[in-house]
Image (cartoon, rainbow, N blue to C red):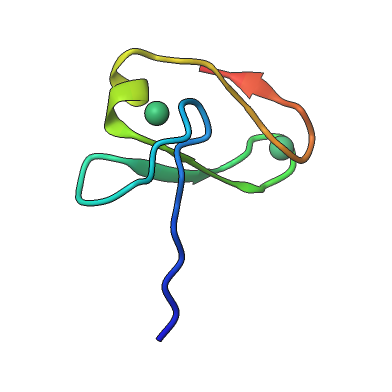
Length: 55
Ligand SMILES: [Zn+2]
Ligand SMILES: [Zn+2]
């Protein structure tokens, strides 16, 4: 069993249940995860690999 804990890149909350999204960074393709709250509030995120910042 592999159990990965995903965390929101903006606020660091552990992602569970529904409503959060996972998408590749537009710059480098690194998978970025965001919780529903940050998505709703359009909080900015910064890619840990390339430093890309976006809404
Ligand atoms: Zn968040
Ligand atoms: Zn990136």
